[in-house]
Image (cartoon, rainbow, N blue to C red):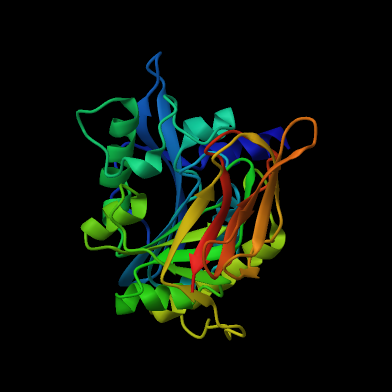
Length: 326
């Protein structure tokens, strides 16, 4: 058993530059890509899995765990590469199951310095430690893609519906989103320092997949996300005859925003994700530590609950729920 495990470890090639032209055709290849070095000069490596067909075609990138507590995308990418028949591919699938290795190992959301990598893209070659790491992710990996699905979950203390962020005004990214079998799709043109936004600036058609809750593997959502990726592979011509029927039409939101508390206290959020609320509906209560009601919060307008807080201990300015405007 030990000898078998050792062979598996040695089978993964360590590289310092990703050259897709050198990836073998007709097989799945795994790499450890060295991105930066740590404080004692040891490399920090990102896992990359590539399935390349015998014929050239579109290149789809799948990225996950740019926040270290967002795990559903890790399992989705692993499962996709177990299921895919590389001999039927025309083009290439590049999977990066963990983008933010230091955060994953520390069970935290941000990078080593606490920075959110998904707010500083495309990074800076001459910047601080998080900016350099972000820049190298973009320059060494993401720039090779034609299309991108960046997979996320909710953060600590929150839960999410299965939803997609995309530019509904772009016919390609709209179709990419519609194929995902998501519960909700939010019109959200990328312009905010996200990985999706940085990819779009390079001409890469990209969507963000929000796949449930943090720090866990949710098998049902992973299956749903996998179904959407198979649909997308068919749409892009990378595989054939893989389209699955979309049974339920997603809820389309023209915009969305988080509601926040203006006092601290013990918070109880009433509606669940995907529930519709009407203007004036009571959506949350806030109590002091003695249990006395301090305040009630009501929906400011009609909408659908995209995500919500599940942490009762809520400081002033804490999140209540993420409201999508249909």
